[in-house]
Every structure is written in C-alpha cells, then in structure tokens.
Image (cartoon, rainbow, N blue to C red; front, side):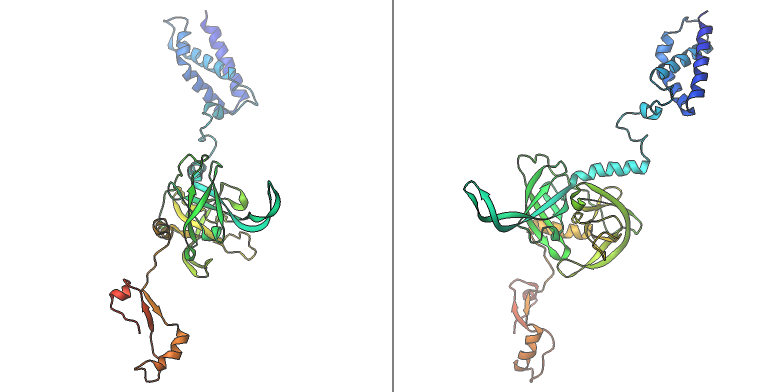
Length: 370
C-alpha cells in the first residue's frame, strides 16, 4: 500500500524537474540519488520489496534531496558549481587557462619589485630644524627575480647610477639590497638582499630552461612591474631569435630573443618564462618609435644569463678572454714607428706592445714588450 503513492510522487517530481530545468540538471539529480543510496535502502518498507520499487524509491529520495538543495528552481546556482569544491578550477576554466594560472601562482613568488634612489643635497628636517643635508630621491623602478636563496638578478640599467636600492618581495615585505656585481655589456646585475625582521621566508629561485632550443612561435610569459603595477603577467610568442640591439653600454648585444609579450617601463629585469614556468630570458628593452610598447620586445637569452650571473655571484665581475698586453694606440704608433730600430723610417705593421701582464697568456707565450 505504501509503494504506489511513492511511485506516483517520484514520477510527478521527475516530470516537473525535466520541464523546469536544463537537461544536465537531471544528471546531477541522478548523481545525488546514487550518493544517497544507503539512506534509500534504509528507508525501504520491506526486505521483500521488488527491485523495481526500490529503484523508484531511490530516485524519489534523490530528486527530493536535489530539490531541497535548491537545484529544482530557475535562478538557482549552477549545478556544476555547486557539486565541485570551491578551490577546484576544472569547472571554471579551460585546461590551458588552468595551466597558466598554476604557472603564475608558482613563479610569481620568485619575482620582485626594485626601487632605486640617488642621494641629493637638499633641505631636510631634523629635531633641530631645517638644514642642508643629503636625502634620497627616487630614481626609478624595475623588476628582478630570485636566482638563489639570497641573490636577485635584474638589468644593469635598472640600478645604474643609483646609490641605494630596495627590493619588495612578492609578499610585499621590503628590504635593502647591495650590489654584488654588474656586466654592462650584457645589461645584467646581481643584488644581494639584506635580510631584516620582516623577511623570514627564503627566496624561491626559478627553474632554468635553455635558450638554445627555442622556436619561433613558442608561447612565452613575462612577469614584472610595469608602471609600478607589481605582479603583472603578460603573454605572447617568440617572434624571432638571434636579434642584435645596441645595449646600455653602447656595445651590440647579440643573440637576443624577440617577443610580442607586452614589455613596458618597469618590466626591465623581469623573467621571460616558457609554458612550463622555466626561465628562458631576462626582459631588457623594446623597439618603439614613441617609447610605448609597439609589439617588439627583447630579452637576454638564459644561456647568456647563466654564464654571466654565475661569474658575478662568484667573483663580482665577469672574466673576459684576454691576451694580457698593453698595446700602443694606432695614432701614436704612426709617430714613433719611424724611430724604432729596424723600421728603416717606415711605419710598422702590426701591434706595438708596451707592457706584458705577468702571468697572462701573452707572458706564458713568451711575448716581450718593445
């Protein structure tokens, strides 16, 4: 006597839900029914009840549970959103978006904001009143990233001519930084943070990739602080490889990575990452007739960064190939060469060596000064 009304209720509820809600809502209701299987079995009126009547009972209880949770009325929350956990993005974003979000959350903790200052004489206020003194004047801002637990890599032009630099970490704690070394020809510099009471967590270095196997069309990501907007992510493609541009020292920088990822003032010194979050370059400059980003940016390849930064951390400077000689300048060679014995009054071809550096390759090769 109790089975027929239950079957009728189930049919009525199912009919109303099908006509009032999208088709996918019915699947969630069926899922709710399966999740309440134990409760439905406990509510069965008789152990001899047929399998068909128990199925209708399961469906009715499941539909009632779904309706009680607000799934059976228009204007209710999306069933997919209600069914998933609050921190699960699989129902909110596409797969490539999920990967980008995860990459940014992992790598942004390694990116820092750098503020530089210069000392200028001016009127300062002290307990004794106003007087002339040295004061810090903001010079500029830039980006950087953690190389290891205590060193920060940035562009040389970010800290050039600055007397003091402060580093703002991803958790917004700030600390002073000192210059370890710089290589102007490569536009790279290394800072060392001076830990204080606010900085307790160690720096998280980025994973390092390779720039020798990059391809045009490969997706890249830039993280930095354009216009002081910290932790900004931009994306683009590798637009070209092996580019050449004049650097801050006036010498040509070779092997640069060209990208259309937006690079603006403040992005300098920030990392350029591949889709796996590995460091493949350091953002350094743009090509633009107006000074604003025009879709052509350049980054120092990571192979160059590893070679230079490793030496800066170890020695404070980079070691270049050298002979160990002090040559006479060409304009002076023309004046003195006729006076050199054996020249017969003619200009000497080649290089006139004035001095040999002891222990240098030239000294070991047996070269002697004139």
